[in-house]
Image (cartoon, rainbow, N blue to C red; front, side):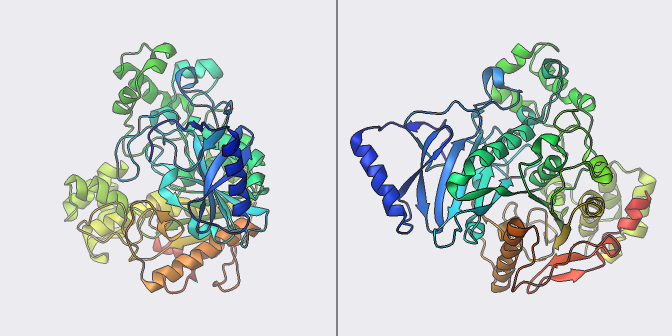
Length: 526
């Protein structure tokens, strides 16, 4: 990856133009992997490359660099470029510290997207479009970690997007609010700007601007929920897929989130109302002071991008009404239990450490934690205390919130619910710990994408499950209904039966005990 600003190619001579023309001509005869290919967007000419499955154009700017006076402001249009923009390599991704979920960066010039399209023999010339928002708790992650070959081979145009994360993407602050009436949500504004760019340009890549599906995992899934609610996103997409994104249905109010911005500015030595000081801070200073804790950064109800919480919008029906696919993984919290307990040296091994973990992780009173640990989730019902804790975290944070979201959405739009349930999903982020990861948070993404730095190999049954999932996802993007010939039937969600498709090998099947398995009646009673 190049950690520098994308630059236009500097060859507008006759020989260069002839070479490009020959490349375009050659591309019509069939893909030659590695061969250059050109296209035109509103801002100028881009030069990408052929792939085994079609074409890719990497690192196209969809907005102006959010630097200097544009830091902590809504994204602005890109002015364009002269000559040919080299779109053969990824552009810088947004600033973040090192983590298992993203590579470090200090480059604020990061508002780029990548476009992948299929071979002419597969493409209809007006293909469904899927726009992917990466996860990472709104503090980690990047667009270039996801190779969408599996999806593209089904005749889909896939777009992956960088957006501002961490304090640079989600910091609310009273002085910033005073400038425009709201602050925070800059990363979501970036995503929305990318969707506008897709609407205006994707036809040139054989994509259908009237058939756009947004999808994402974790924070990316949370982003999809936010776009369902945001009035400004209306009409920019036509289906929505939420993968493990229901972990927070009640977003904080902007005023309640401003304390983090005040803390960061104070730690860096900036007076409360001095936006010039804040915009002069180095990226390194901001990254050093931006840790919001285990919750990560969050969107806020700002009265502009988000007029209300996701829960309020879904309950009232005041959201952008499109077909929705929503799901979770069976053992979501295994990833977080590994990160914040085992790998931090805080092992959950007995009843006392189990109870203390419940109190520390979820802010639950001790008496309720004891009840959970001895009656509702007793260690005896699980292989270990750690796995009992994983079950609690999965249920309270992910599973029951997802059930609540789908129950509300299904009153207004078609909804299809799933639970990814491969207990042997390869772990591609973290080392082994004292308990099995099973179907951990984000484990399903590798069944849809080829993930950067993953050398894991699927078993034949897992490869088959991957193929089935790709067909479900792409058929949903095509028609708003995931059912496709050759796959097990997937009926729409019924709020009376809570029917859910269990994505398991060798054959997915409908289950009706999701709420029971995850004890959602108990959590609803609280």
